[in-house]
Amino acid sequence: MLANFLIGLREGLEAALIVSILVAYLVKSERRSDLRYIWTGVGIAVGISLVFGAVLTYGPKGLTFEAQELIGGTLSIVAVAFVTWMILWMATAAKGLSRTLRGSLDEATRPWSLVVVALLAVGREGLETALFIWAATQAAARDTGATLQPLLGALLGIVVAIVLGYLMYRGALRINLSVFFTWTGAFLILVAAGVLAYGIHDLQEARFLPGLHTIAFDVSHVISLDSVVGSLLKGIFNFSPVTTVLEAIAWVSYVVVVGTLFVLRNRAAHRPAATPVPQGAAS
Image (cartoon, rainbow, N blue to C red):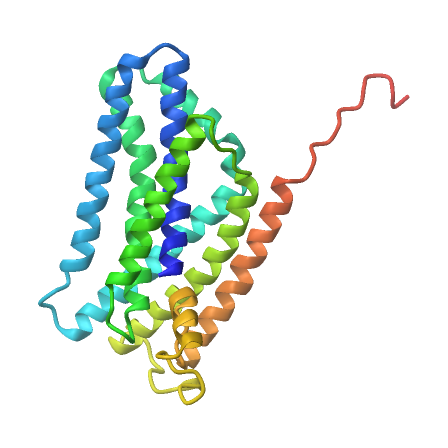
């Protein structure tokens, strides 16, 4: 539940920031009458995201077990790819996000184009959030079968994000977004690694990948998923007491490679710009 709460909070706050930037810019440029087009685009984006989540949840019903596992495993890996791209992109592009969105609004001179700007800006976040929450929920429910708590966690995170976004828009709250996205990005790397391992396990159960019975470690007699520690590890990191060798390799490789890229991009983004040398000073 905690993992999905933080996923909903992080992804929801990104979408809330995008909406607040679009709304604030139109209000400051005395284009309040165009706000309806922004809200139309936001509404369509939310609707498409909800439909996408429903298709993910109910679409594979009625298929064979292997087919469901194959679809589930593939979509989990696709979700990890999208989230990885988002984490690395936000590490460097967050500073220029507001300028990019304002430029898009300046170029949008027709009502439908404003709808498209809001639809694309929010829709990308919505589809990405729906896919990752679905994958994280499937992974969390692999051993327990319980999906209500993970979904409630995601919903709470999104609600908190909307409230925070509104307070920031009204100027009642200031958040160091650089620190927020850095820490939540690092946390999401660990969550995504668990979802990736879950996807690998699904593909092994579908007999698409080998090694389902080649176990790296089995600590089920030490850490039970019914215990507090087991529940926390499962809920936050999708920890599985019985892990195959391929799952373990995927988890470690992902954390090492993506974690290193994340650190390098953050350092580059926060490196002070070089001070220009005045003409004649070098002579």
